[in-house]
Image 1 (tube, helix red, strand yellow):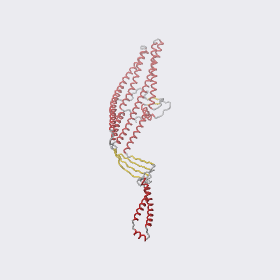
Image 2 (cartoon, helix red, strand yellow):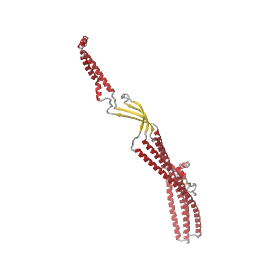
Image 3 (cartoon, helix red, strand yellow):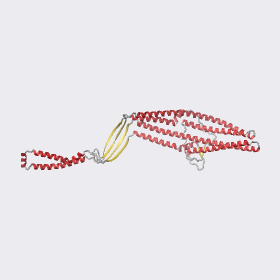
Image 4 (spheres, helix red, strand yellow):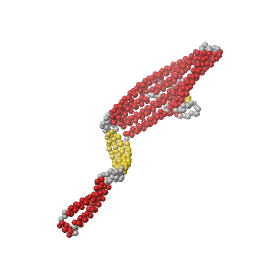
Length: 498
């Protein structure tokens, strides 16, 4: 929220051809808005959040549906070929057997019995004829019944339709689901810490470039002032040569200084243009945009006083790099837990409904029929030749490496905080000395210029005074910018660059 007003300021249009005034905060806001790596980080955060939500679903029951159709060239048969051939002839077989048995029985009837039956008109021929007719009819009926039996046992499974709906609820997966969810949480934290690191790096780069442009702009004005001084001295010496009070050698020496001043100004101008192009690129605006920085014309760049404080613990808490390394340690530990789950039993509750056509539960009826089912699945690993143990050892090794890298990073960050603190203290002291040197150089130049006008000091002494003045002013600019950069470096080392 600190840079919100500058963020909206950066969105305001500027008239064509106008100089766009940029402050440090507005540059930061535009850089954060237009940096593609920060956009990538935001997308990665969304990806991590969705992966976390996906991991949460592993606790919940999963429902799946399956359906299919299959055509086969043969159907399932409950009877073999001999049985299918025998049953349609069942009546004939039974009637033949009955006819033979009846003939045998009739042959055993005594003659006296036939005499008595003959008196009633019943002869063996009549009985045999009538019995043969009855058995023939029974054979036809038996054959038909046998054929109906064969037809009834026909499955007609050449066209099979099947489908099922299954519900699976994990009960115990060896702790793998819990570890997976913790890894998803850590992944989301890593994405946030990575975005924070890139954000701080973006602000660090924009601050460095901003103050580099300010430094070059101040040195440009200093080079122009110095060029004006040596040109004025060159003009005075040329007049003195005409009057005969100065030698041509003195004039040539001053002309060389003029050329050097012009070359210095050219280099500064080129460096300023390139630095502004880099600043525009970081801010996401056209590189040929005409921009002016708010601190370009400031005589005193010490607008913010930041006292150096040696606070290593603050850096340990704030640095996103350390947070990422800690996330890696936690991630490897959870990966070890997932691998350990490979040696633990897994239990899941399963249930569902299945249908088929033909209906297997009603004599292969050509209709859909189904059934409910529920059960418990238990998987117990018994022997895997130590595969899981080897993977667990490898994962523990990766965790150890991550811990060592974390400890190494902590030591380096502690050293960086100490260095940045001392560097800032040194920059403040250097600036104080540079200011004092500037006062002396100004007075020295004033006295040398006055003495030259009075004719008691040579042009060489004036050039030396001008060179000393240029050096003192340049050192003051460098010291002021160094204070700003040391502030930025300390904030980055402490993880407070926001």
